[in-house]
Figure 1 (cartoon, rainbow, N blue to C red):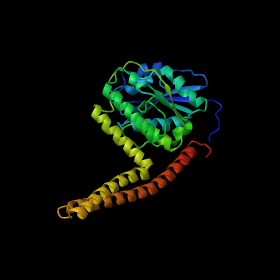
Figure 2 (cartoon, helix red, strand yellow):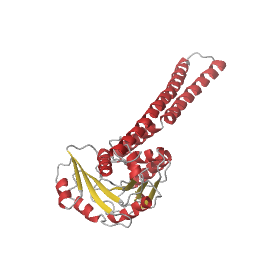
Figure 3 (tube, one colour):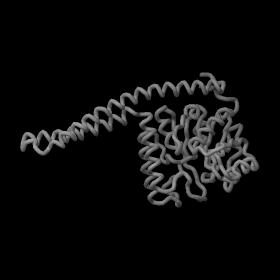
Figure 4 (cartoon, rainbow, N blue to C red):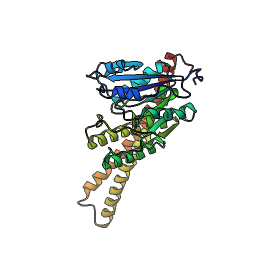
Length: 322
């Protein structure tokens, strides 16, 4: 573990894509002094913008500006920000949006649990059911999605899609985001798997300035979110996922097979051969799916070893004790 630093450094990172219109207001709203924090710096990650986002960031006084030559997506920009902040000595990293959605004054509440040693990750709860710019459908989907992710991650976060969150240095070191869509869901599932302490605090939001650029509509949001949740959970809990699927297939085959046997014993099996074929296919598919889960679990063990090795490499690169 890293020894407690003599001074605590906070880096507030802002992933951006064509945010020249709102970035200056976002940076101006961020706090420059917080009790318990000795150094506060801002980091702008320009994810291949084709406007003057980087120029605006430098003009208004961002401490660090990282510009990617091409757009790589929000999740990759977030990961690039974490790596940069760690290399520049951040003890706490706060992520916020460039459209000034979240009130900068809430950064103080966001980092408080980490300063007190009560949490590794803190998520800002917007209370989505109260947001006027959220449609009824979006509120219901957000509530259902949050319930699903809470169950999968073992956390109690009520607003899992909130991008306003704080990470301790240890939590940031352990994050390995592989999704191209968004980091919000994946980091929570990872945190639960890696037994990091996660909490949440209520935060205030500013009036909506523009629609989200992550998706084109509710259908796109639902598809991408479900795909991300399924992929990440299967990655970290493959045996459970494939076993459940295998059992469902096996039970389906067993049920059809039992019906065939009943019909064969009572009225004869003539005309029901398709049921026997379907039962055999489902039973075989169920058995093979469970075997796939076992293989995936073995691969997952290797992945966990690789993540441990990556963590040690990161510590060595940063000159920290293992």
